[in-house]
Length: 364
Ligand code: 5CU
Image (cartoon, rainbow, N blue to C red; front, side):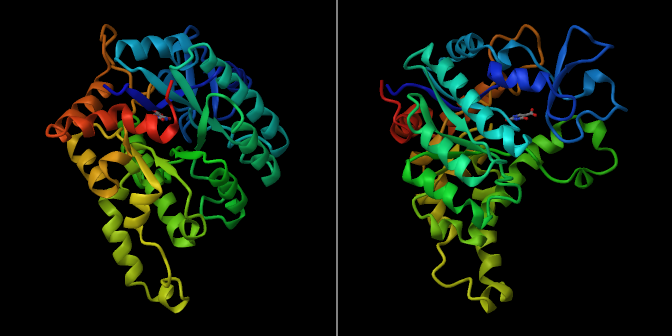
């Protein structure tokens, strides 16, 4: 039996918590006067609208977000053997350039240290100082490749500030490829809040999380495609959160729009271009955090069962019932895998952990 490996599971390590608690603008952690005993994590744009009661702002944050012993407890409770933990959004994107490099070193060392407390059970995706200059970012990639438990980096979609289709990222992509470090691409910024309409505040976090996040990822990868990132960096490996957003479902439409675009044709951007289906099967890995068999089947069709990896998104999406033992969100992902691979235990074992062990070098 392959081990069960969770590759989509977050932490805010102690050094990052100190940073969030020291801040007063998004992102930050705060106890509000009308609920002094409960800390709130405010990370998404617009979550701290003063017109909302403090108990609706952001989300409650408890020790499951930063205490690594709680991560292990959660893993044991859900039969997870190994986890590849990553700093949760918004990473270091908001830091001034001059602070980012040092903070990345401190936080990556902090997480590497946490992994060392549970040998064989914890690995991590490092975080990059993306607001710093390219040399500082590349230096951290090189340093990460020497840390025992690092297996790649987690990246948001903003890149150096103007997206992942920015040619200035080429040295960063080249360094990641050279050091065989996988990018775990994860959304944070969503879509402009105007698309959710004037009654958005009545709908909790559903629209930004269910739709804004996946569309953000889809747009980021399509911009990489259109700008030629995948042609210039043919060996770049990227793991997409939430089963690729909507990419497996929309890949055909994206390809068709490219083939019918007069502007791209006139500017010679269609010649020698790798197509999205090839990239999905060669460069892209997808997590299995999609909560249904239908989404999982699309991911398998697009990238193949051997490129799909189990995840939980812990500590986000806890059950709302206080006495729940197991998390519905985790069991939904387990259930989708067992239904989608009812006819192949080998494939199911791969998705649950065998693929992660192979791709991320997690052998004991
Ligand atoms: O619930 C949320 O806001 C989130 C988030 O911010 N990041 C994430 O990975 N999952 C859920």
